[in-house]
Length: 289
Image (cartoon, rainbow, N blue to C red; front, side, top):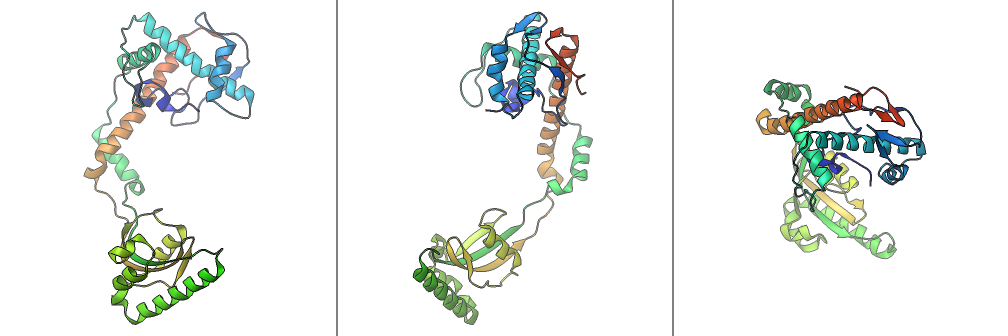
């Protein structure tokens, strides 16, 4: 399993390498004995940690694994130096924190207070990124499905002919759509007159969705072949994307900006620990701020 923010304490706010920009790479690192303030990190530990950083290049995986262990060791050393009292807590995915994870979480909670996004920053983010706060394109539609499989040639041809006959009948009497759907549709929606309700992006097959986008409200499609057979689709209404009001998304924006600020603050704290540490066997570049 590859490391991500959720693998670490404090609900994923300890960014070992993943910040908003590309992670700093090691200037040089070789599989030699690694020490952090005199505390050795055995090559066997780095080799075991490498499974969380798969890649084609051994050196790159080794560098990432070594950096993860260095940061963990620095945080644990700092927590013990401060004689913190940490009580393991239940983890969101189940189980209980290890004592070391509890120490790291307690250290971060004490040393890096929670961040809050100023109201003006929240509003500016909303104004600067209108495309992020739009409702999806919605289609309200109904259909009749004549089930068919291409590997059954005779049945497939009969299904096509049946769909064409239904299409002709609906062109003559469009008000009979619900009646014909109940009588002939092979979809469970037939019991409801073929009604599908509102459909958002990705909720149907690509050919079906493409057909919806080409129809005008009230228009009936020609028989449309999909992997399920032949469909007769009628678009009832189209809901164009609308911008969500600021009041509906402000709390979400504030939480996201606060999380980003918290991650940057923790990164700065870790960078300070790295700068103050005596690390042998691994020379990182100056951390990004």
